[in-house]
Image (cartoon, rainbow, N blue to C red; front, side, top):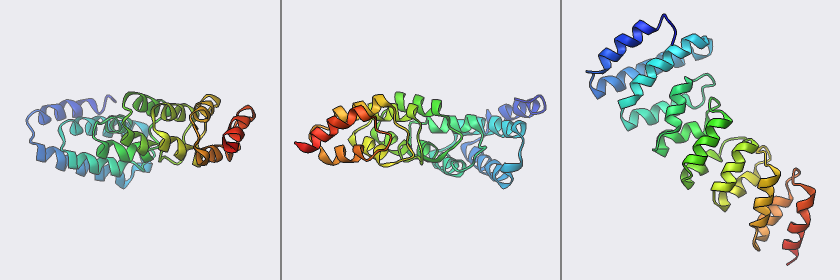
Length: 203
């Protein structure tokens, strides 16, 4: 928190302690409007002030408001990082989903932590829809997810896959020739795993 913003935050905390839910939601919407009008021009310190204020407002905001906020912040490259992190970790997938699927503010470490702690298939299915995923993230998704999630990763050439994850998928083929053929199409498939897939297709 910047020294300039600190008095504002102290005053806000006092107001919020007695503010009704409707006021919180209205204020959060207006603050989000203000942020989005000129988000690209804000300095890191200015975004941090929005982060502190919005972070306090979301604590007791209603579900509808949080879903709306998540959708509005998802495509913003400099969205308030703590707010994004809190919403992305929300137990309600309607709130967390837009950010897990689209937010560039979330780091690989964030995604790995979320996928590793909360491995509901609905949540993992949302995360795997991101346009590209690192090896660290696909490692968790392949380990935690179902075959459909693995298949989505295989079918996205922009998703990076580690050798250990390739091996995990190859050993899980179990007669699924369509899946074996899809894995074989990956240009980054380690050469030593190809004979296993060739054998599966020959059965």
